[in-house]
Amino acid sequence: MYHRTSVVNNCFVNSISFSSIFEIGDAFKIDANTKAIAVQREYPYFLDDEADFSSYPIFTEPIPTPVHDEDVRTTFIHENPVISVSSTAIIGLSSSSIFQIGSTNHIQSEARIKHIRQLLPREEE
Image (cartoon, rainbow, N blue to C red):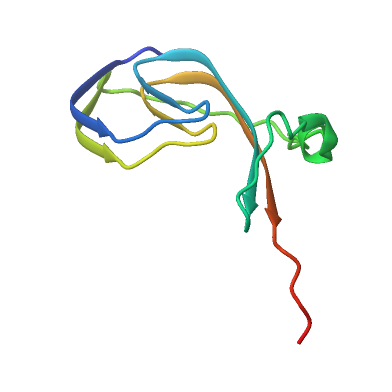
């Protein structure tokens, strides 16, 4: 992996959550993983430990990976070994997102979120 120097004058990040990463500099490997169950109810009634990830197939199904069926040859010429950033402003990073100023050899990022809406029964007219 090619190493460069990251120079950042100003960076503002308002919010980082749920396995997200903000990194200035190089990394060999970044692995971010988020699993979440989001329940929205019309009537706010919640129980402790009511959601079990194993109850929903979305959390256990394998994610298909792309098949690389051809060789790709690349050449990089880094005339300036410095990554220079004047200023960045980020509102938010969430659910395994990555913001990096630098180089990374391998990135694996995964977010699996199950959204559930529970509405009250409607009376017939």
